Length: 284
Image (cartoon, rainbow, N blue to C red; front, side, top):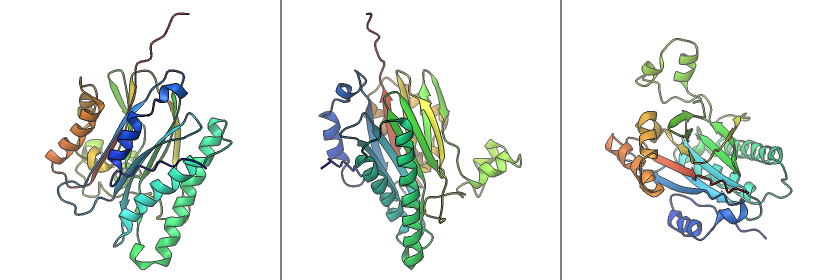
């Protein structure tokens, strides 16, 4: 029997915060404690929030999983696609056994992405009301001070180290294809009429190959996972300014959502903010 903590931003965020406050991850990570906050907001224009986000802590292994998804398509498909992706991948993570290496974890999550992709694709083929649905997907698997990243679509993962911010993922978008071919600049992409077209989504095709990379998580660094409702409204430099503020992690997460809404809030806005605190080196 395992304990399953699926924390949907739509129904159980308050319960998740209570769980986090009572869980000391440093006991299982050699003095290494990670804090995180999740926020999701419908925005000012949309009637439904089709974003989904969750953080899972494995009950047996020193592993933390952060997932964010932005659903789209169909009469009711967007909400279903994002929620299903987060739930199915979270379940496979929480059920994991005999995963002794990073490669074991990577293989498990890769298979989970493939499974949810096929499930969503098949569902859309069988039920007209789900036709055309899909979801972006960004996964950060944290194993002590290493992070394995999976990416599909145009949601993003950023890393802040010191006073620098960098985008870890690359958008699977139409404008990025134009940028890579030299047809437009990054500045032109920001106002391009097709800037919201994505070229890859979970569930839109029968098979999928997610982007995969591995990064280190140094002391006193941050990870930011967000949907395009945030990244389309807040520049990287402003993201960095918010993260480096002398404020609580909760205040910073709130600031992201508030600013995106102040700048129009045309889309759903979702963010997961994770902090790796400064690690003190104790002399031997």
